[in-house]
Image (cartoon, rainbow, N blue to C red; front, side, top):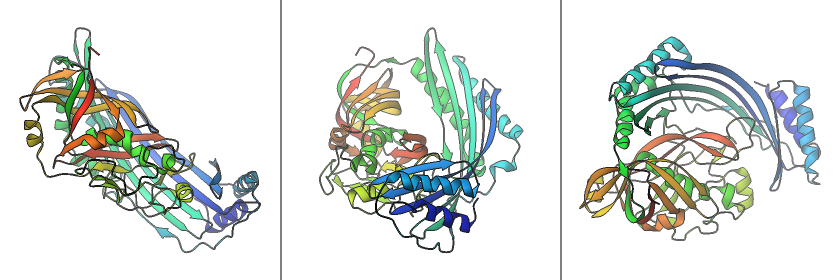
Length: 461
């Protein structure tokens, strides 16, 4: 890392010519990963990454530069170049740095580096064995492990001087079922803001068995019909629709430049009365959590929608300037190579009071999207198209035959208004979210919900 005196000199250089705000972000990261296919270890990698990012702002204009150097002369020259490139007449003041305030997003019980790769490889082989033994139609299995330990320091011209220690661990298992030319895949990939205790706590037998079950179930599934149906969407990763089609449109990245369907709608009704949605980076040990954001701001549990009314956005420092609203501690970046911007953390539709069984039994005929896949969305319009990994037909209030090839099509703002049932089985699922500041860990989630009418694309579409 860099000394306090060096950081102070960099900040002074960053405002030497122009700019009203300067920031230094310092990062040191250790990472490890292993992967296996059909028990065979295919990849083992580890790395150490260090870098420094320098940002200079003038109003809503900013310049960002970075280097993986500790040379004070190099970093000061970078800061001067960034300051000069803004070509602004105003020059901000520099406040002295206070005593560093230390945070620890993660305090692992078992450090990832405390166990050899051989033991982690054995766990991958075990997962492959469990999945392959589920059914003779399982023709390929895979498993993966990764961990990351990151230390950051953030200082700025307002006197902020903070550090954070972050540890994340993730495991994945995948199974492929084959029947003739047809192949289907099942997968689970949980993660947490923990050390290796997370691996000890997870149910490996369930993860591997259920991945295989999903693949085999879908290999036997009938083609999904297309049309307009009531759709019951399962919990956990079912929240990907809200995350993609609505969540990104509530970030200052799009709201601050009027590129969102939700811009200027604070206090307006944008969802049905039963919908409350939250972005919460403060959940202890959750995958997308952090003690400070990547601009050094302490985050809040941010209620975005409350009983259908838009209450808040996710706002970073630049978005705060554009929107004239305070930061919500939502500034995030993949690493020092990226300038931070507003991002989701752990984003979910809050639990209601009904059981999933009640919701399904009250649906005479429709589609049950038990497990969602990936898709595409236009944040400006909210239009989306998502695949369904595991779907079923609902007949007379009962889940019946499995369906393959289902896709859900619609607009995020319209879906929010047509959610008419919300279950009590809230669950989060872990993923990686991509945006202009790179890929960051994010959890998505919801309880079981029902959308009263939705366009379903099927195999015959």
